[in-house]
Image (cartoon, rainbow, N blue to C red; front, top):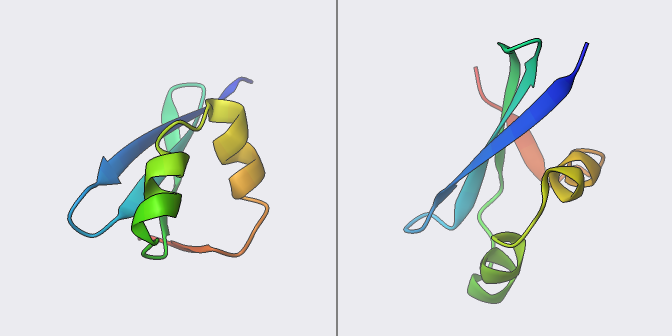
Length: 64
């Protein structure tokens, strides 16, 4: 089953909400900790693979 990652940015909070889907069904939702402006701008260019690697860090939390 294919895993898909969709990301939405929150400019005012400088965070990203990361949604992970499997077979079109939402399986998990994460949010980054607030980032500095430079890092936020850099992360906006991330690919799906970059976000997949990011989820191996601990710079985010699970959103219920």
